[in-house]
Structures are given as C-alpha cells and as structure tokens.
Length: 94
Image (cartoon, rainbow, N blue to C red):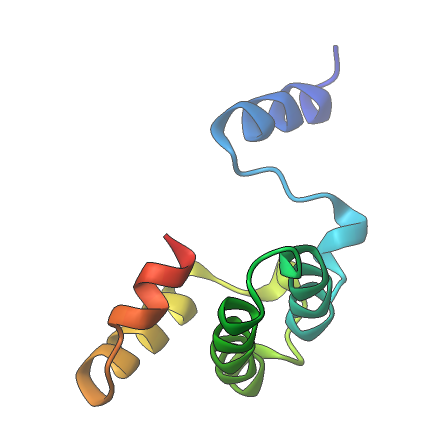
C-alpha cells in the first residue's frame, strides 16, 4: 500500500477526507444541492433554511469547499453570534 493510500484511509476514518472533485465545488453550488435534498421538509422549514443558506452563500459562496478552513468558519460564527441571533442557525444545522 502506498503512503498516499494510507493517508487517504486515515483521512476517511477520521472524517477528514475530501473528494477532490467535490473540493473544487463552490460553497454556493454545494448549498444549492443541499437545499434540493432538504426540500422534503415542510415548506415553512425549507423557506427558513433558505434564509440561512443565503447568509452562508453571501459570506462563503465563491470559495471552493477545499479552500475553506475551519478557522474561517469559526470566525464567521463568532461574528454572527456577537452581532445577531444565532440560535436559529445553530438549531437548523445541528
């Protein structure tokens, strides 16, 4: 087994593996796909999710998934938590 294959297996096991094809997908593209899959919920729930998704896309939309760093996301969450009501976001995505 090659070193690259071993690293990939470890990343998969630890939840850190990112499919290279999906890593190139933008946050906006991923959010569109997520909303499509979320459509089975009640219409009011989907509408509320779209409100939150728009906020996420405004902040991170053009970034590729592979380029985002946890620190960027944490900083944004802190910003939102200190400037706005974050409970709804937390409830939706947890």
